Length: 320
Image (cartoon, rainbow, N blue to C red; front, side, top):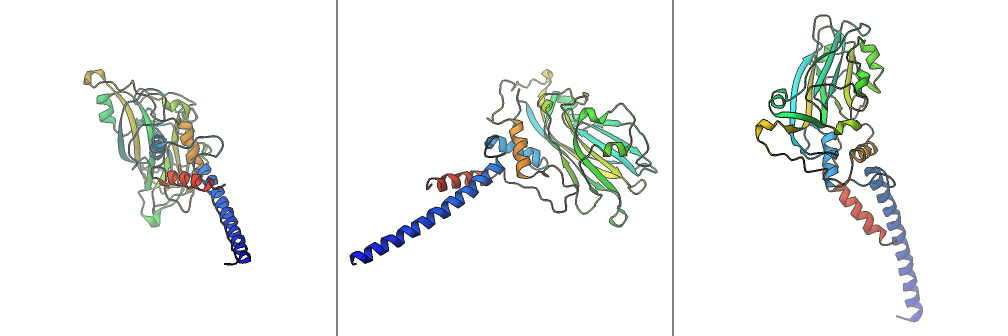
């Protein structure tokens, strides 16, 4: 090869290398942006570690997630998933009502009315796992919870609206008379009552939900949260089947002879606030499918997807 030919080949090689570097830079920029979104932002919340990913999964999919520790401060306890299904709002003449689930102390409030403007008071019952918790637990807190509801009425008879939100426990005003219309104003999601898929709302813990609770005792707290679902315009006496799920962390009664695990603390370097931020950045509607036409649970946290994305970013950036 002559000297001019060598020079031309070198120039072509250099041009190809420059194009490749530019492509890598562009790809690295996209990867960094996507990783930042999944992790709660490139600046701000840290990328979730494996324990925090497991905690996020319990909030995002409490019915199926592998039970793990949460990113809570304080002592660790023992953990179980409890479920219970109850038919409500099926009394004579009932066309409206509300259901509120407070996962921390594991208690459910509900009300039923002839119409959405009728004032009624809350009635309560213990949440899922009552028998086990009463027999074994001195204190409890929730790591993930949801309400999944379907109407009892057949498809052609289904009608009405459903409203939902995550609200402070204090907003429920459990000792006062309220109407379903009033409670619906607390909700920031609404849609038609449907039967082709369960209407689901998942719990988002408040700042006080890191604390353990006396089982089945409600505190009038602005820092604990509840799932609220309000129904109006239902067929009279048709009813709603509600399935309550609660991943409960509990401390044993001293009479059981179970050694304490309280000397263990949060196994993650992340906090529950990091977990909530990451879930919201990934999908702002992760906590409810109500009012969402196309909905699917995103299952990326418990996989190696994020780890792979971070690795790709580092590999790409080494060429920069």
